[in-house]
Amino acid sequence: MSPYDDAQVGVGEDVRRAVVQYYDETWVDYRLAWLNGSNMAIHFGFHDAKNRGHAEALENTNRVLADIAEIRAGVRVLDAGCGIGGSSIWMARERGAEVVGVTLVPSQVRRARRQAARQGLEGSVQFRVADYTDTGLDEDSFDVVWALESLCHAPDKAAFYCEATRVLRPGGRLIVAEYFRTGRDLPAAHESVVREWLDGWEIPDIDTRAEHLAAAARAGLRDVVIEDHTEAVRPSLRRAHNRARLAHPLLSAFHALGLRNTVQHRNAVAIQRQYQALLRETWFYAVLTARKPG
Image (cartoon, rainbow, N blue to C red; front, side, top):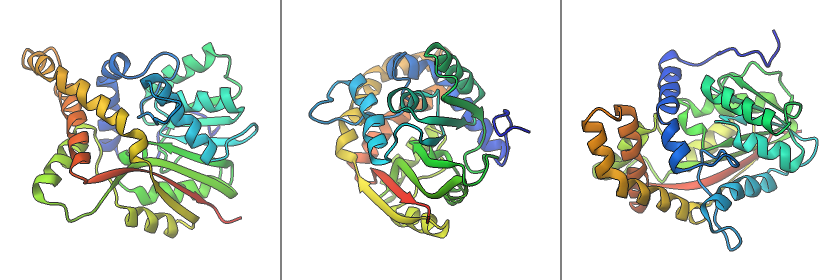
């Protein structure tokens, strides 16, 4: 069987079903309130002196991470949790990379493939339905593994690090942009806010800095570095919160009338809880980089 055949392997059925349902049910919210047809970004934006607008910041996220990961022409990248392909297509178009994107969500693969075809990039980027903790792809076959706000959905983060190490070539690079817990001993009231955020986004849990470092080390990765980028994404996080807060009365009324389902309602609430949890200093946004020994 070709490694690019659509096959779901190594993922619990309950997790797969929950993640698929979440992204299918919330697609309209993302489409109307966040991304556009150009960036296809189901992630937060990196703001700096040159990129202050919402759309610019979303694209800047790809630029910043690609620079850190040294993505250039000819580099082979696994986009682990690729969503609808925004970052994969950006890397192929802007950096000349060869990209394979994987996601659990079949509808995301279909959208990503359509967009790649529209841009004439079918030869540079491919998408498949697969679990990034057990991809079925060849070992030692990628220069970079890229995970942009996707690792959070894995019940076992260590399994992701092991799979990333397996598919990376010797000397290959890992980059993860993710939400990190500040600790496991949060006050009960703070933990409740975190839990409402995570449950609303079908995130089993987020790990601490120490837990990520330990998992990466056990997987055999080296030169593991975690850098805090919270301030770069804070305007984007605040934007999402403010829009959800303003829309809350109307969206709640729609939910009560049966015009929005429970998944959609919990998603909108979770957006508010995420920022509230940030203000309580229960988590931070970080970029983890590492290398496979070469």
